[in-house]
Picture 1 (cartoon, rainbow, N blue to C red):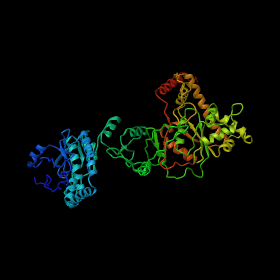
Picture 2 (picture 1 turned 120 degrees about the horizontal axis):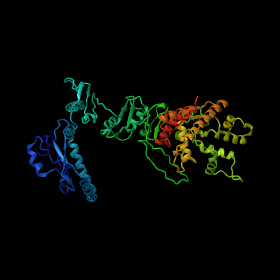
Picture 3 (picture 1 turned 30 degrees about the vertical axis):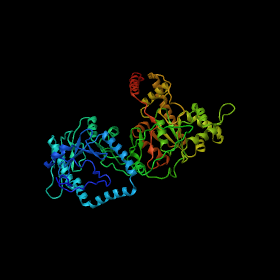
Amino acid sequence: MPAGSSPGGHPIPSPIRHRRTGADTRSSGCDAESTHGHPGTAHRAASVGWLRRVADRWRTPTGGRSFAVEDPATGRTPRRVADGTAADGVAALDAAAGAQATWAATAPRLRAEILRTAYDLLTARTEQFALLMTLEMGKPLAQAARHRVTSLVAQATDRGATVLTGGSPVGDLGYFYRPTVLTDVPADAELTAEEIFGPVAPVTTFTTEDEALHRANDTAYGLAAYVFTRDLSRAVRVSERLDVGMVGVNQGIVSNPAAPFGGVKQSGYGREGGPEGIEEYLPSGASVSRPEHRRQPAGVPGIFGRGGWQKGLRVGRALWLAGPMETSTGTGDSVEAYFVCGTPRTGSSLLLGLLESTGVAGRPQAYFRAPDEPAWAERWGIARTDRGGFDYADYVRAALAAGRTDNGVFGAKLMWGTLDEVVDKLGVVHPDLAGDDLALLHRTFGRTRFVFVRRDDVVAQAVSWLRAEQTGTWYLGGNGEISGGGGTGRTPVFDAEAVHRFVEVIGEHNAAWESWFAAVGAQPHVVRYEELDDDSGAVVAGVLAFLGLALLPGRVVTPYHRRQADELNRRWIARYRAWAADHRPAR
């Protein structure tokens, strides 16, 4: 083979020689050719092996391995190059570090001449480099794409796939390929794991959800996946287990400018769109301090987005809502305060945490539960009276300061029974309004609305209430509550009669709330536990709309509390229903 030529006979640049030492500074991997189609190079390849250049000497790689460089235009292997190991990389770094001292000691003028020589050699051979780059790129894109699609279909049919329609190129003009549908595609066919970039639809079947997930995830790529089902719980479950960046549920379009667009694995890094896309252009910084009190939200910051208020979708324990692109935190109809009202074990704590994480709906807590008021007062530093108590007007002012967000909205929770205690105490602060519950609340908290949480399955609610009473654990996770998260360590014991009493209490308290709302002329926004558990995003969006509030663009709504119900709850529910059937009053 003539000097200065590639194995295909194409000219390549001559090696650059150092003016002082005469050392050959030609890049490594360019001297060891393959013998494909070039018999005359066989002896040279056998004699020098696959080399790499380190510290101005050609060396055999530590592992002695090489890999082929394929010409995409012909599929042939014009050469093989050294396949270095970690030890080779370390040696190269050591050599470079050692050479740096020599280079630094070289006179600046001489260094400039060396670099200028390299520049002259490159610019003088632009045509040759252009030819080499063209060969490296291979066939024209359309031709190469059709060739690839043809190869993938052929490989699939060779392994047992059936061509239902199409399966071949269209004529000799252009690079068209017939729309193709393949059935019975085996799992080991390349087109089930590769991006096809052609009009080919491989159709496979599955019998179980796990099998479908395994086949969908068995690829190096993970941009988008699509789930079609009538079962919302299945859609959420499968979406969480798909190893992709985006999931389309019952639709084929996953792009939304308000949601992050991007994939995982070999489908790339980073995101476009949504707050994540903006963050790609923003520098990160840190500010470290040692505050007196630190609060760590329990939510995991994973995000998944879909457009529209009613389409919030939970992934893991995080929730992303793509709401209207409002820049304000409220409207002219927004309220100044709201109370989440209900009975225990209706998901009220979960709802409070979700509403607080919006950043516009106050910081709602059970501030007015009488047994907890002394602890809240101590946390807020309220001065004690001579008798050890505190002025209730001071307490309310502190609660308002703690429970408001920057937009002035206050939130709190009231259980039935707590309401009477609050209005009685407020009647002392505002004696002119004593006896007028709604007027007292408006005078104290401003324009006030009510969110009424209830649970359709009161047996499940009663079982949960009994377990919380016995164990002292009223929530898992939490976000700064004053009590109820520690637990007593007691083992819960099933008590059918106690469950029955709670069922009756729940009915009485729900009826009492409804009667009170009617008496004062308040129209509450009703939230059902079952809806909150099924679609937190839609529930939060509905509450915000009721309050006249708007979620800021890209705000992440994160639950601070975790589910407590488990298999023991389900067993107790079944046991109680059996007990209740046996104890049903005779007619």
